[in-house]
Amino acid sequence: MAAHFGRLRKGATTTAVAAVAVAALSASQAPGVTTDDLGRQAAGAAQPSGDANTGGAGGGATGDSPYYTDLPPLKSPNPSPSASPTTGTTVSVGEAEAGIPATVLDAYKKAEAELRASKPGCNLPWQLLAAIGKVESGQARGGRVDASGTTYSPILGPKLDGNGFALIADTDHGAYDGDPAYDRAVGPMQFIPSTWEWAGRDGNGDGKKDPNNVYDAALAAGHYLCRFDRDLSVQSQMNAAILNYNNSTEYLNTVLSWLEYYRKGTHEVPDGTGTLPSHSSNSDPGASPSPTTPATPSTPSTPSTPSTPKPGGGSTSPTPKPPAPSSPAPSPTPPTPTQTVDHLEDANTGKLTATAGSAFSTKVAVRAESKASKGVSKVRVRFTIIGDTDATFTGGESVATVVTGSAGTATAPALVAGEKTGDFTVRATVVGRVLGGLDYTATVTPRQADTLTRTSDTALTCVPGGEFADQVELKATYKGAVAGKVAATATLIKSADDATENDKGPYFKDADGKTIRTLTDLTTDADGVLKLPKLYADDATGTFLLRVNTTGGAVLTVELKVAAAAS
Image 1 (tube, rainbow, N blue to C red):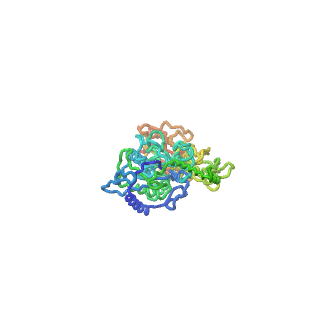
Image 2 (tube, rainbow, N blue to C red):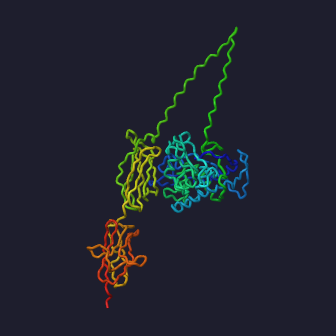
Image 3 (cartoon, helix red, strand yellow):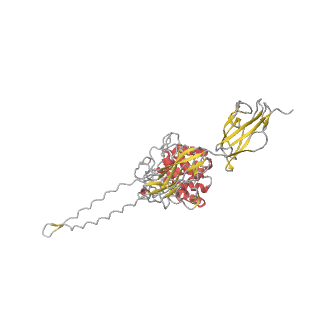
């Protein structure tokens, strides 16, 4: 989950004391997570690798890449310097660890502010992003970023080639990680390319979503943690979010220890001067999380055996040894289920239509098939909502990843229509393969009402030149149920047979006090109630008609009487 970093190592005593602190913390907070039928996570059992909600093959945002395991020191009012056992350099054990590079710290705080506005119920603390950034990349290699927040060189994790790590074949043609064969975790927050493809955000407003930019990466991490309507002020939900980022109890405890440490107080330090961690989850203490493979040393040649002199002169050559038997050829690695997928087929998905604000009754379902048209299980299928729409999957996300079952079928979570009407697309693709996807058209229709009634039976009367004492109030229903947020219009018409606008009689007033006799852009409230503005009368007398229409065909005509006052 990280690349090469400097080897600055804490003293054994500090690390041991910090380990005790983490043990105490994890004893009260060490949870696992599971998922409910809506894809939300709750406290319980540990999340299995390859869960449908992780967003990356085998392990959340990072693909379960390695991470830094250094623990924070116990805070001291007067931190004393100590010498690094590996370099001999004197470093500050207390305050130095609390320092976060200025640009990196700014990125975390701006991500928190954006999430506070867009997802206020998540309650994301910036210190959580800082804790994850610490264990993932040592705060972007101690803040080695330019003014825009982009790292001077890419931060890459090891190849996820199955050799000690998860096996994730290339999904981005090397676009993010430079590796056309296998995926690698990328950037300060170590996203694998297949997750960044849908989770990436533009945090610095430059029009790009760059995993190597700390503003983009921090905002993406914040949104990733806030998925499934999580409230991170609830400890069990925060634990679930962290485990969803990297599915490891040790990772959870390490992040929580840094979160607690940063909450006690931090300060900014100049970019490039941050303290670098040195211990990795995949190696011995002091090793880098992404070690390079050393060159294989050449084998020294075997000295020749001297010849044995023959009696009477000459020499005898040594008896040649028989050649060593050749090693058997290694067995070919069997293909993964994903590699055997040839195409996606529709799995009897019905018509996708819903009224604004309601759930679609039909779910998108596809089947992953081999060349022989057999279903392939354990394949990750990504469903993505595309188009100008505010429709989402259950849980509020526009992307959902589901693992195919024994029959090769994957069913997306239920779609929920927003307020925008019209068509949009749901696209199904195979994660980890470059294959054609399947597109489904979904339609959101306007809210409707089929009945309008007055909420009062009081006669609506007025004297010439006066104003009506009662306002017209109506209630809309659809198939007997309340019809909230339904569009309506109200027009003062000439007669029951002539629905054109009347040019005399009662009228409304606009914001400037001018006479108007047609109201548009009306909407019933959540209870289906529509209360019209106050009505006024000109000098004309008689019985006049007000007609109200709604989307869905509901129509109601109301009588308005204007007569001189009785003497």
